[in-house]
Amino acid sequence: MAAVRPCGDYKVSYAADMALLDTAFYRVGFALLVPALAAAPFLLGRYIFLMNIIGIFAIGATGLAILTGFTGQISLGHAAFMAVGAYVSAFASERFGFAFPVAMVLACLVAFLFGAAVGLPSLRIKGLYLAIATLAFQFLIEYMIIHATGGTGAILVPPAGVGGFVVETEVQFYYLLLVLWLGSGIFAANIIRSRYGLAFMAVRDRDYAAEVLGINLLRYKVLSFGLAALYAGLAGSLWAHYNKLVTPEHFTILTSIDYIAMIVIGGMGSIWGPHLGSAFVVFLSQGLKILTPLLIKVLPMFGKIAVPAREVLFGMVIIGLLIWEPGGLAMLLRKFKRYLDLWPFAY
Amino acid sequence: MLQVEDLHVSFKGVQALRGVSFSVEPGEILGIIGPNGAGKTSVLNCINGFYRPQRGRIIFHGKEITHLPPDARAAMGIARTFQNIALYRGMSVLDNIMSGRIHHMRSNLLACGLWFGPAQREHTAHRRVVEEIIDFLEIEEYRYHPVADLPYGIQKKVELGRALAMEPRILLLDEPMAGMSVDEKMDMARYILELKEVRGLPILLIEHDMGVVMDISDRLIAMDYGVKIAEGPPSEIQNHPAVIQAYLGEEAG
Image (tube, rainbow over all chains, first blue to last red; front, side):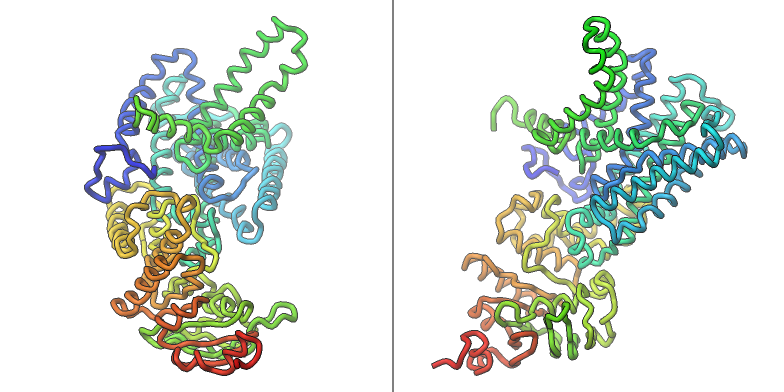
């Protein structure tokens, strides 16, 4: 919520003042965004697979935004929660023949339990030490998956489907995803503006002062871990049914770091951040996949540098953002909005 | 309503409290004075649960709370402010005060995530209470400001507001006027007196400004080196030889 309200936008009820889309800019923006997202398959054509990847990772990143951005608990094991969701969903549908919605809900629930369990030590270990503990969880899950499945850990997964309808094409999957993406995004935004969000932020900003307000630190930290894992589990389940194949390589420490890059680039402490960050990271890594071979063709001497170009660029973007705009893309969006509020005047 | 009996707290050989006993009566302002390091803040930390005393008991409304965790005591109605402001720096004034309402709210996670319906009604009702506190403290203009950007005096007010939002049954104030201008101190004294007169809220107050603390307290406790050296009405404490000695080092005159 901005300290300065635009002229003429009067709130006449507390409910209106607590609205998610609190100014005309966001209301109009959202009213344009939803039809644009719905029309995306017609606009993007065969590139719609980009939106599918962005959407799945945006859901996962929303979980990490709740945990790290709003509750202030660092997790280096977010991909492991995604793996839990993916494998639970895969096992449930492949081995036990559950329908996709059932498998998905099951994946979310199991991931929630895993998250809550990982969150238990967070009462005592904080900051970097918690990061190391979650890192241990990351490797533990990778190890467990390889040994539980035997060998490569790869499982074929049946495609997603609702009722008798089977999702086969990218576009069909996109519409399924879009519903879940919007739904889970709005759900998270509502959580953040509710008493839970306030408690999470209180824990983040000053934990002992939160305790004095009657906030049980353990309860809210565990809940935050659970929610984060639930979102990651949902993303994992969707990922499994989207690729129709799960392997542990999709959920390594690199994916966990990508998630952190997403919420840092997108903007910590913003509910738009994970979506913007996911889009940025996916566009950048997919773009580089196209650009790097081109670059090597034109300038062969860059061959050695071009291979890790993605990591180098990520690093540069994150450092640049931390220096010039710690609020991330979401803050840039907000500043752009402020600029529009006052345009054409400087102040 | 709040009895503190024979509190002992020590940190590896340093005895912060050595047998402090007192009680807070309904509707009174009890001031605690004493030189730096006398153990005033330690007493508050024991009452709200940050310290576990090695010996002694704390009884609140007839229930022993000595071994309850801080959040359970907060839920029983013990609210406090801190000497060094402990606001949530990333949040607005409104959200800071609203966070004092969290433990009065009942909406579950699902209702909150869906928002429309019960959760929205509940949050709106609590927002009304928060707005009343904002009116009371005259900080309407800062409502949407992030607290980190606000002047010190306003931050102190917001912290008081956050404690009030809990609808406490006792308020512990740790140097609410430290570092304030004379005007701000007068405002703060007015709020504290109004809380006592209008709401009948008992207040335990640590304050270094002798003028203020003598004026607004009903009773005073003087502490030095972890023990209570005097207790009584302000006029009596003012001329108490032990208090004068604690502050000036030797007998006056």
